[in-house]
Length: 565
Image 1 (cartoon, one colour):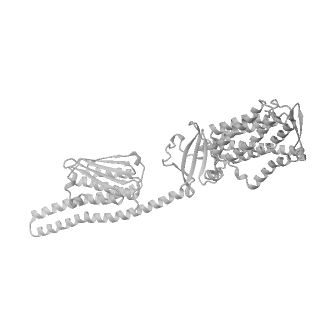
Image 2: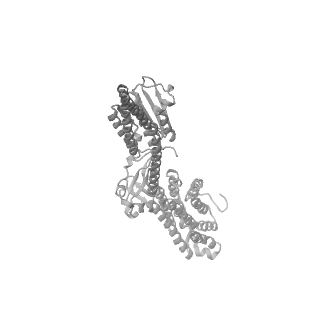
Image 3: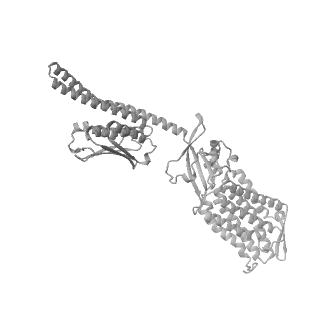
């Protein structure tokens, strides 16, 4: 350097922090939509002229130039403190405190040193400057003392905000801790600068502390993704949520909960924090049993008793840091009481509608089957009476024999109808047990061995009323055909779930037949027309595969949730 400046290696430690901070500012600007990113950029823009002034003061050889840069760098200290507090408040999601009024109150004191620097009397109010062994020394004036105290107040306020975030939010604990260390390093450097025993003289101890501060911010930004944690609008997204939110640590103790969770659990936050989750939620599933699939049906719990009991769905998730390290657990409680009640009302309406439709269909089926049987029985009885009146006993006996056979078939049909009606009512609650009970009674009545192979995914599940009723009726009709026509010794029923459908297969070892040779009359005899109509009513299908002497296989498919009517 030439003129009023001379090169000194001391300028590099002064310039290192702003250069590194500018790189972090570019990173922050790329994440400028995240809370605290924009104030951080402003903080860096305030630190850069301070650091440049400190470097130029060291390089200056002219006393007047040294004094100029000393005063120049000093006026940036208060704006740095103001920007640092703004950064802390916004990052911790406390930006609601930064109203237009409070923003003005913070900005005005930060601008005061710039105005005082314009006049000689103002500069004296800030500080009295002298040269001691070639180094500038300043003694604070009245305004300087007031602004220094105010600056320390800003620093302690920012430190308190990060300490609050450290205690309040486990997710932001590491970034907050690193910011606290950075704050402490810069404050210690500032205190050293204010004494006559700066061991780093002639360098600015605050700027040297800034190197450590930059390192802390770099780790927070890059390793802990400080601006990607996004504590965005915690007040609106968490505090004001109607769903209860509970954060658990790795030992399943309550770390934090929102007001909705306090109301749901009936426990204030200060009493709930630190307690075991099972103390507040005894029916909470063990974390090892939490579903890994986000699309899995959420578990439910019932809180309260009697008429005041409420049903909640639990959204359970594990909180992990990069690398898979488990931080804790998150429990979101969604009140589904009204929704479940409405679902029950809708289900009851569907059951009633299915019952009415089934009664109408049964009336038609009884007319087509049992009605015809009774009509045939009436004709046989009349013919027998006429033959007896004529003294033709042998032919009358033949008619009576046919009448007995028809009556036996009718009796079997009625018993089967009653058995199916009983199974229909049970199927509303649980389809598989209802079918098991029906098959057991069918075997006891007919002597035909029956087996059921049901998919585990159907266990404990009630099908949509219309779909369940129609599927059970089709299965009953299929088994009736086995009893009447197949002369089978065993029958096997298989239930599976595939692509949102229930697939039911009935296989027997009976005589079989040729489906291609069945006409409309034969279809009515076997009930195939009714079976297909039932399946089509809920969007399903029926397929029959048989061969003479090779048994029969009936495949039925219906939607798992039924089809809207």
